[in-house]
Image 1 (cartoon, one colour):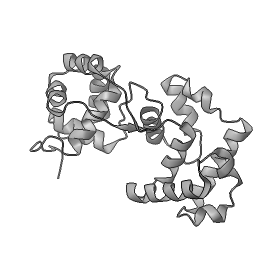
Image 2 (cartoon, one colour):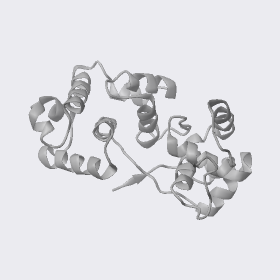
Image 3 (cartoon, helix red, strand yellow):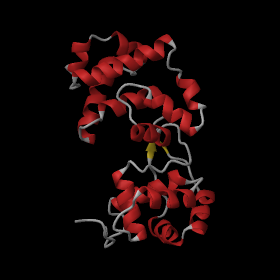
Length: 212
């Protein structure tokens, strides 16, 4: 059964009270059902697999892995021959990252359960310590797997595009972004869902002032 990012009227009403422009967007779009992962290990695997390839290609490789190994577990990834994983469509570097992560989970040097209970900044730091995981990826893991409520990523180009479109700015620099991030806290994750929707064309006719 597919799960979606959990939010409701409490979050949207709080955002609407803080920001009238975002309020108009929320009223126009309505509730957003955004699928989320439930397993942090599998979510990290999918993130590594998806680097620099299309979503369709990522899904194809993930499906091949599930067909080959069933549930994608640390044991399955760590014990698989590297060449076997590469034949599923993975680069040597991605296989190296995936197996390194799987081994760290198995030997206890990376504690999945501990990360799930860390504050956001500590969880991001822990995830970034993994080979192949950067800050943006860690932030997406917090939002789309751990369902943290206050993730608004400056490193996400679609979020910046959505913010330009909503607030009618030609550019969102770090200082301006931080102003909005503070305003939309502690429900930055829900705001992110709406900025992504706007960037994807959810409101016909709404243009990007920063587009060349």
